[in-house]
Amino acid sequence: MRNPQRKELAGTGCGGVGKAAVVGANVCATNQVAAKDVTPTERGTLQGFVKDYFAGGATVFDSLPFGPDRVTHSLREYIKGDVHTNGFESPWSLLNRAYKENFHKFSPNDLDRHVQEFAGRHNVREQDTIQQMSSMRNGMEGKRLTYMALIAENGLSSGVRSA
Image 1 (spheres, rainbow, N blue to C red):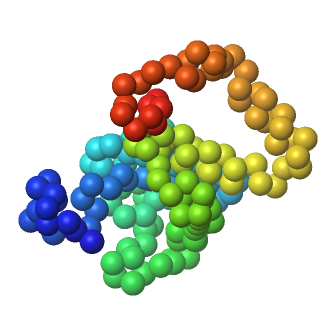
Image 2: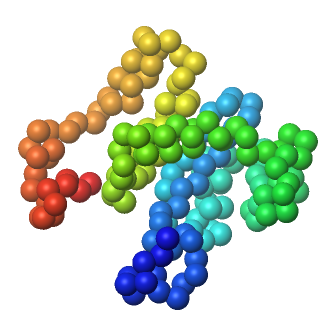
């Protein structure tokens, strides 16, 4: 619901105003997903996401220039042969549930971290606990967060730590 008191939203008529955009894709052969927050939400940014993560042989829907196969939800088209968005419903659902039930708010600075976390959870869900722990350890190798960096003052009156 738009707040008429907020000048930056007045007269825009767009439901996505003031919201962050997240893009995601699923590789059907491996059932692995990739997702990230995107700013700006221009065609080139979205095309760059696809080129970075799914170069060669990717089937993409909507207005991207990769292959002729696509589904158009605005035309009530949801599946066409092997082309659909169903493979990404699970990661979005988990992220949405965590947002509503656990976090209640994602800081714009931390949004990409949350999105990456839930894409990663989806990608390792079929591994056993030891394999998941090993993957996590390997991903942390060479990275260090000191206590001083964690508690460093950031100047925000709310006390929330920024990235």
